[in-house]
Image (cartoon, rainbow, N blue to C red; front, top):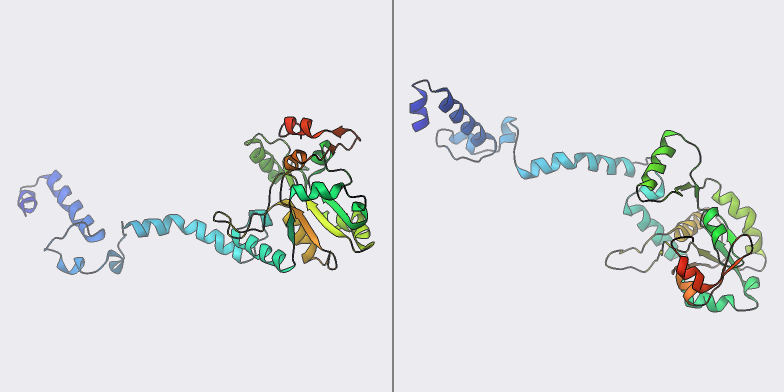
Length: 278
């Protein structure tokens, strides 16, 4: 009321202040002015006026994220690794239903010492080839789930930059020939005596065991490979296992790694240089 009396004398600053207070009182319901009882009884949205409430701002800021999720649910062609956790939940449920189980480093190390290992198991390393060449489990077959980035298109350049931000200069992309490579290199050996398939990747430490942080388990290249194979009719009559531990844990259990050139890497050397050369 004092502002109204002052405004009658033509003070521009007071007039502007009063107008602003009335505006915010009508939109954000900050003030309770008896001069506008009808406006105060309903939210600002009822009059088409912009709301300053926290919930309205949150809805506006999160709308792009919700739109992206809806697009993904509608079938956008995204890589499985780039989708939401819903995709992994579906995959992990399917793997459990097919009795895909883990194997620990200690157990695998003991199995590798058995004379009939090659007649009972097929060991597949899904790491990219340069990593496989530097160090792998003796007798394993390399079928790349991902391969080094090829080409210099816009997508490839952005992918290389993203990897480079984390000082990883061996960026990878999905191997489009994964299934064909598996069928040509592994399927004949699996079908010879109904052998057990063991998938390893060495460092991503995937698991199907639920935890507080990973209620549906944690994905890895080995588990993703198992899902792709089983979804495409492979290993129907074969038991599928995956290594839940790292190659470092294998070395601690006495497993000697080898290079593609035939050189042996004793466990102590592997542990000393792991993460640098291997």
